[in-house]
Image 1: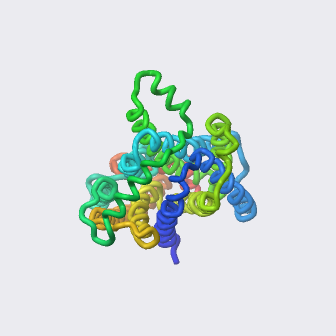
Image 2 (image 1 turned 90 degrees about the vertical axis):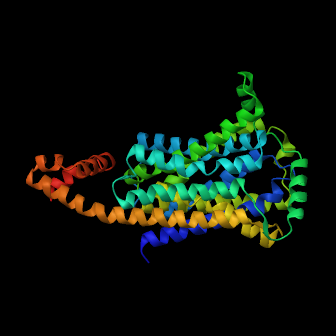
Image 3 (image 1 turned 180 degrees about the vertical axis):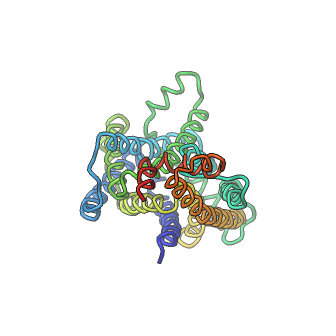
Length: 388
């Protein structure tokens, strides 16, 4: 099986396990568990798994560490692990689960824009493949929004039971994970709802930064498990320091059986396994496609919640899921076509450098753009090409 096909199947499976995680942790997170403690234990478990696995599995391919690489891993850990989780918790506590879910489709949009800006994604508006990638992204995000904000009539199950369960959830107290941080923002004149909305937007942007900036870094450090382990190390350190401020009550650290099961699943599967696989997939298919699979989470969550929690399945989930699948197909098709099309310009660029035909290269804008993109990602590509 080819690596791109493996990556697509792995991305589907990752979103399925995230959907299962939402179902498993549903009860644990609504009975009063301190969510900051939940994240700390989750990150520590993930680090304890990723570190030894990465050490032994990638010992032959792992490049030596440099100060610049450590700074890059620190950046990924702060954005993708620490800030991503912390901002989501703050936003969730100050707004509502429905509002938090409605903003999550912004992750693929932010990721796509960042990837285009840093040169890891190339879009040609004059080709069918480029239009397919852009259109597929729009369709995919539309499907995710449809699942988040529109329920529609009940297709399968009892809608009255869902209303009763939602009312019970909102009636339960939700512990404030980092009230000190939210209070700082409210002291400058913002109300709680706007602070929560800004935190949720920041959560989406941080996750997009994590995915987008992994791609060029994987060229310098082609060891995805080790990169994920280092990111989790810095993220867990930052999260633990926050725990000293936001979870200083010993009772916050006592977990029930259901909470313990949920946090173990979160650390082993939703963190260690999924983040490692996402990093590897980012190396194969690129950041945009990795992020575009994320809207499958609410679809899988709806189906699994119907099976195991007897929740209802609504028309919005079915229609939104269909749009997500169509959008993913369009983006995948467009990327495959662009990769095939890009191979010829790359060979022609290499040949032109060999012949020192710089004038011909400048006359073709697409090839010039490809040369600029390649030189920004592979600084030594020009030198290697001239030696061929």
